Length: 261
Ligand SMILES: C[S@@+](CC[C@H](N)C(=O)[O-])C[C@H]1O[C@@H](n2cnc3c(N)ncnc32)[C@H](O)[C@@H]1O
Image (cartoon, rainbow, N blue to C red; front, side, top):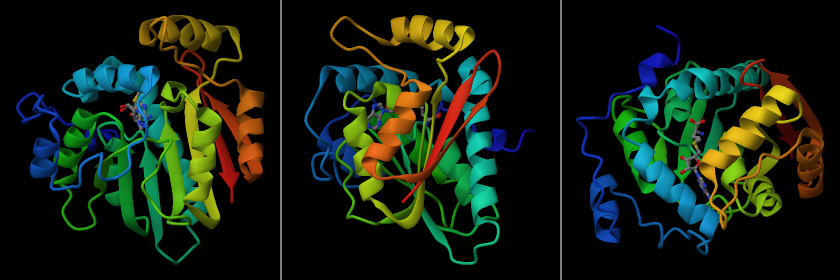
């Protein structure tokens, strides 16, 4: 079994209710409602994403895209996080934004790395719920989840050592503002690690700019994969220093951008 496959669950039999009323949210997961935690103003792109991922949550972990795109992304995060933290004794707090079904957060919490708080945040309620069900199998130190909006993070300044975000930024209508938010919640010396589709060569452009953009957009709600240089500029504009970027994969190319506070 690949290192991260143990965290993929078949949720067909779990109770992923379609009842997304505030009472149900609070009652089922025992966490404050999105409204209470500061989910920001609605927007066509966000509404579209929430509908898409609420629907997909049930089968997300069994999707072919897991193998092609999501698992390689978690693996890349794992390598980068391990390389950074391996010689640092202090525990770290990590926030994963657009956490989906929580596989990456489960990997961190279940690893030998010295994590303290591992928190996932996602706009789609059903994704949070699947993530929560998965976390329950971990026991002590399990990740926690919040439904919320990446553009309006319900956390105080300097709350985390690491912020991660994979395959989610292209759904955000205000990407620069969101990267500012990520910067705000990081402590000095903290890192943002962000992965999204690499669309700066012919294969990446066809896959992400043509197929995925077409599949995930409507005329009023268009997703946008940020090009390599623009991503770097966005990080620098938000205040990140030592920005590094790396591309990985041939047929499904992804890029990771890392910035230090
Ligand atoms: C393709 S999934 C990626 C999930 C996970 N990071 C992974 O790599 O498997 C994109 C996720 O971003 C979430 N998302 C979209 N817009 C969001 C927003 N404004 N705030 C937080 N999460 C959002 C979606 O609900 C979905 O779970």
